[in-house]
Image (cartoon, rainbow, N blue to C red; front, side, top):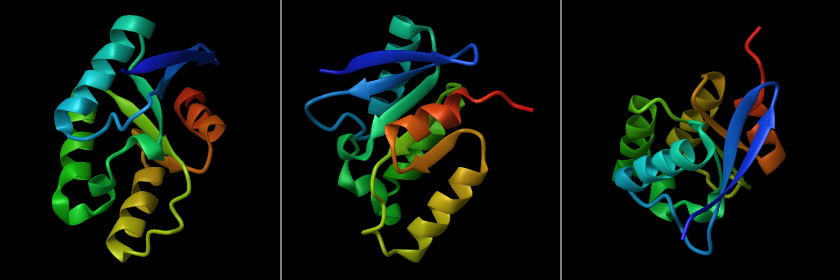
Length: 124
């Protein structure tokens, strides 16, 4: 069961997704998380621990990351996934993470606090 913790900073809200088991397992689960956050916390910004993301997400050839993130963005969502990504040695994945972090909708960061910061900072 998904639980959310709402955090508001700089007039921008985000939700930290909490669960006992993986919650980002396919494109529909990404949409479900977004709708839960919108309904329960009135936000489209999600912060999620890497441990709650299916391992296939980090194998780009499965297509899970692309499909799930595209669905999320199509519905107006933004996401920060936090955790230790150092064990992933795939060049395409490292490039994907780097490019995502340059954008405005998807971030891969070391800590929950940094995920919250990325999603709640004000545009200059």
